[in-house]
Image (tube, rainbow, N blue to C red; front, side, top):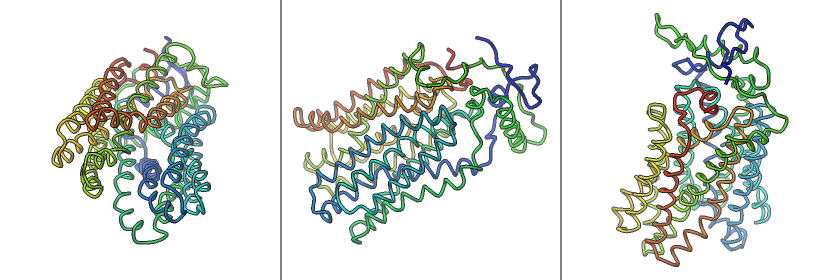
Length: 461
């Protein structure tokens, strides 16, 4: 494949292209507020995902409806997630990553505000669908954007940083919900409204976020990409030691130009095979993941533990989500991601297997913490690793399709896991979830080697 010589800050063709110059930068080359803006949007998106689980019983009482009817809002949100991811990815690949971020945050913020104002089950279902559109779009947009603007040696670290912010959103919901929901009639509405604060980040996105230089290059806007990279180089030099210089750039391959319909690029090999692989990875993983995240209290109470005890065990073990995600910011780029992803998926499977076969309060707390930690470790690695498999012209679409369609596995999780619980008992449900971890590990090993390499070099492999 030809080596890129497209453009530079001076417009000459005998200098390394902007992407080669970006990937040689050894430090974060942008203002820190970029991370805070993106992280804040991610925080509130994930905050909004889990609020409904704490609000559902009270909403059912106030709306004089069954819990089953109110739970349709969970289903509608998941459907919105899939549609939003696929729809907004087209915006990202055709009109830019920044615009897709603004669209995603707007959707989930508007949907969340409207959900807080719901007057019956139907309105709640509709408004949670709107917020789901934005959340699905946000996950695909953030993964694509941070992966593309980060220098190759730092790609995993800063994608993991955003996921840490997301899991922090997960972590604080139980504490806020415990204060608001049982004690105030409008407590669940306030809880929803807090999630809408993510909309404030839109004010900082238009000017606070640089465009993706990779997207600019495939659009033929190489001079603009060179300007973005030149600013990044200037910022990086300010963060280097006094006598330290930026390392010399290494050439990267050219990528094909953008197509009118980005999805076409995913229908040709090798992208089609990678698309199928990662749809399979996320589909299988989400069966076990959603089983653990949403059904564990039900499984424990069916086993004979009280709901209060089960909730307490899971709050303690849930700290692992945040601990795992933070840990990936320290080592994500030090080891090949295909191997670390397989390792953590295997550890996740082992921890669930131990819980299923030797359940006790101590086992739930200890191995529940390990299980949650491995989720925190694995998800940011898989987000980064997924994006590394698709070329820039269709990267957002590839991430959205794999993660979005993979969520069908999450939608089927209650049927599969609770079905196993009914057929084979408590241990059977956990064996099924553990099996999804083993299969995820095997499939992850079938991906490409991408850690530390430029995205253009990795996707050309």
